[in-house]
Length: 332
Ligand code: NDP
Image 1 (cartoon, protein in one colour):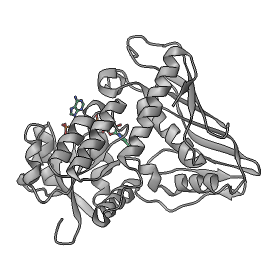
Image 2: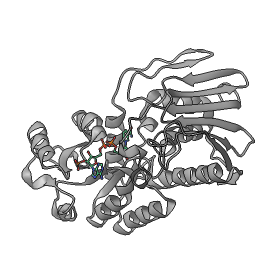
Image 3: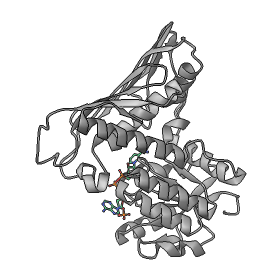
Image 4: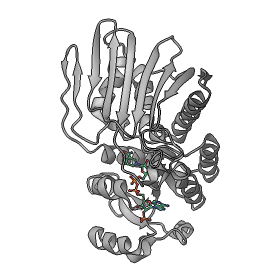
């Protein structure tokens, strides 16, 4: 905590998301600030130190990371590493006595999620997932329209998130990413279906399609369609791919419809309903997300996007992969 009462955040892994979104957002936050970094790249340590005016004592690498426990400037650790490192760096962070935000997907397996939740519990520290869209006004409006049944019961819901991935990136490596586009992008679709309907799936089915480039897609799915059976019988239709482009969330209800397209970007979202267009001022989803977590820590209240939610989603992802492999309906 600094003299203004802001909690200190250390970003772990200074890649595209940490540098492009989180660090800039931390210049706008009211309840937290960028206090430190953890990086394996010495040149980044030098550049970030200058750019963000960081003291040497708040700059760590992956080897001396655990000694962050002795640094009172750091209250919160934000894990922004590739997926296969989320569990280890969350557990080590909790053991160092820090509150944790971990990026999505929470981890590669439910077993890892359990270890992360247990470590934070044992340390008496909070754990939150980087689900920024719970702080975005367009997605919150979808949630309100759906959950409050403004247009009646939802009869149809669908969501897609896909982009064309470049060859060679870690997102295509199953050991690092844990899976293909479902892990990276599909998680947004299943989240969106759940916060729009206010329900969790009871069973899933899934279909994958032939691989276009076996060199590029060695051990992950390229395109995946899946269905989520909700407790009231509604079937949500979802699709994700690393060789298509899509970004939407659509709901049709008894008395009207509501949709976002694009639905999942950092800004420039567009929302439409049968009752008119949505129009919200531009804001930083990440600043709101991190401020909300800082307040949760200060007020000792659980985050609205806790580790348990991340675990729930990884469990659904595991069920979808099982349905994909077996061709069978899998209960969640
Ligand atoms: P990048 O590849 O851009 O950055 C990852 C960083 O992790 C690297 O720059 C590096 O930082 C560090 N790192 C340590 N070990 C490895 C390794 N073996 N391979 C690659 N990088 C390594 O990834 P992103 O920033 O795009 O994604 C990071 C995480 O954030 C992912 O879990 C992703 O799902 C999530 N994400 C979430 C978004 C959201 O909207 N919520 C958006 C984008 C990503 P250094 O050099 O400092 O050690």
